[in-house]
Length: 470
Image (cartoon, rainbow, N blue to C red):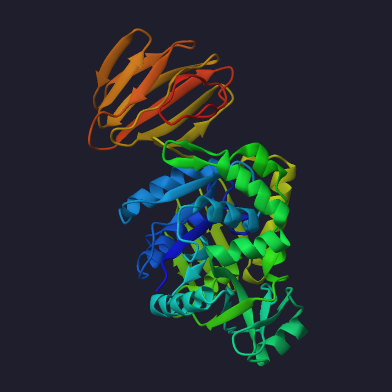
């Protein structure tokens, strides 16, 4: 059997699951169904495949550190690669980059392309489907996975099967009447966005149908650079690359497409309602997460992240609470969340991009209080990690250690702080915070000044190679 090279596409932002999903903390990084994020669950699935090679994960540059942290949390792979996209160009260029990055592999190696933000409930059926697809891919086919529909769904594209396993056509998202016809016809399947093909076949097909894309992404890899644990694609070459999905760039043009029909317990979780449909429910049809109390409530999705949420007399309703936003809507209108996201973007609201808890390569910080001239944060620094050597022009900082040990550079002084000890950092003073211990360091930071923005950072040294916000 040919080796399988997983390519995990993890570059999306998933705005339809706002307020939980944000631009800087997107859907694939969320723990929506259990103790693992969607990205972690995807990696756990591929790790169980026979003949599988270390995965390649393609991710947006702004998500690189938390992606690496989540992969390392699994402690599952001795080796893996993270390709950084300096600009977003959709799925086809991302797959091209991965194929070019595999330059030293045998061209008969099978690329297994998987989105990082989907749910698959049945591991055994997934493994069986991948092995069937690998056989077709080894025979030179461009293989897609068709999901056997469970309802007339208008939110998915469809695949029409022709003779044998060949694809007859791809269909756009239909209206309800057409979706019902597709549902009743055994030769129509939901388009899952999962693919398999040999490196050789993919390169030949893309060279025929998208040569400019192949050229640009070839240059992006050739001129790319290793950056710590990442491979950074060259920005100028990728900026010139046409942006297109793999469906439009290849699948709808090739005459060499095959479909593997499967029932995986699959969902792309394109909305809160889609999540409600796949999760376990209580006796009244409710999906609940967090500290929730329900009275006379049925067929609802209620999720509490930080505070107690109580519902009384609710039906078919969505309630999602986070530290800085609450969403309430009929479940049937969960698709309309994207309209809210559009408004947030237009109004330049920070709730579009970040939560009150923000993840950094060294740990995280949570904004506890925010006022015009002061701000209070809880800072968590991972064992062995340290922030950049930096200074601020406009703010003064007071640090109080809650747990752990802090090594602090404060101007010309280096000190160790323990629980209930503190230090003061004047504006304009070079400083650095480090956790030399084996447990997490937690401290409270009080910032005071005329400007408290995260861009008031001048870096002098950084172990993570960053140049902007910490």
